[in-house]
Length: 187
Image 1 (cartoon, rainbow, N blue to C red):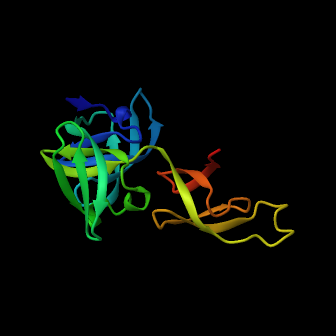
Image 2 (image 1 turned 180 degrees about the horizontal axis):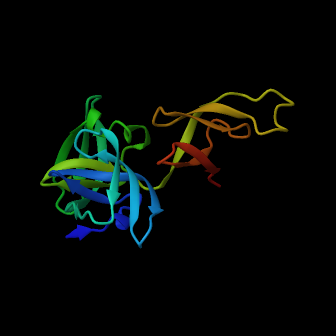
Image 3 (image 1 turned 135 degrees about the vertical axis):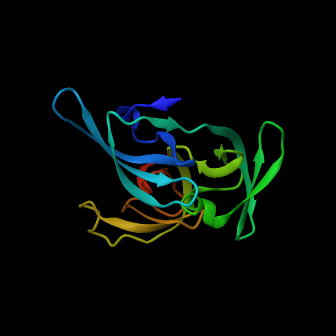
């Protein structure tokens, strides 16, 4: 199945030369006589390399056949992360470097989506937002609370992010997994 250049929206997965790519940024420029040129920033789902590509309206792009499985994150031993297929309870392992961007958001028991291309794992897809507990947050100096002061907070997964001054140790906060930024405190 082919895609037109205007279907290459952010998040679309396609293949080029047998390699699956994911669109991470998209911009379109309409040119004379009804044509359009699309500039995309794409990321290889095999080796993680990012590159920019210009796609003309006359080009056809092949959609990548990616299979998604609902899986549960079990545990890790530092170099390997272990997951279980929720459909048949088979377990499989993934090397840390293959999911380096996602490891700071994984906690034991989380349900995520594993993506496969030609029976090869190409990535773990996290929910857009997740809730994590703050295990350490610096104290705020009295008087610093009137402006938008941000401070470092360590989350239960070990990730350190910037949070507003009112967030304290023990709070559960919602985080955007695409940007790694604080969204809100969970009530």
